[in-house]
Image (cartoon, rainbow, N blue to C red):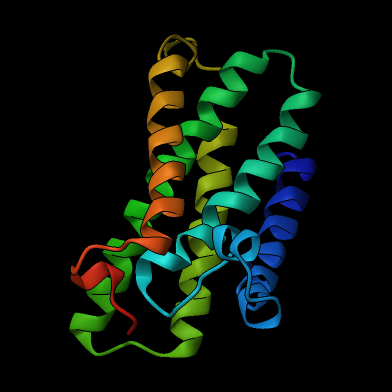
Length: 160
């Protein structure tokens, strides 16, 4: 993986870690959109979404094929929550739920997403489905915002 992707992944992970505390420091609607408002698994997906989206914006500006790069990051944005939630609930089922396990899982998921985007950035196939992926990312991002204020009564939305 190129150094700029590694640096971007590290900075995105650190930004996501900092966002974890934003709502506690500034309890307002803008901070509720960007950071978790409770300890539910769903709310913690914001720590993947917003920093990765920002890093994608920065990395895509210098990309040779911007459409493919965006498409690769869109796919990463959609895969990362699946990986994170599946691994999280597996850890809980196995009794391995701890703060350090959660933090490690977060960083591994973030680096996996950036690795996936890096590997797919030149794929012709990914470029062809970019519009579809964009629609899914918009739906996902909108859901992150909407369910911060009107969460259904499902386990993924409940504080752990």
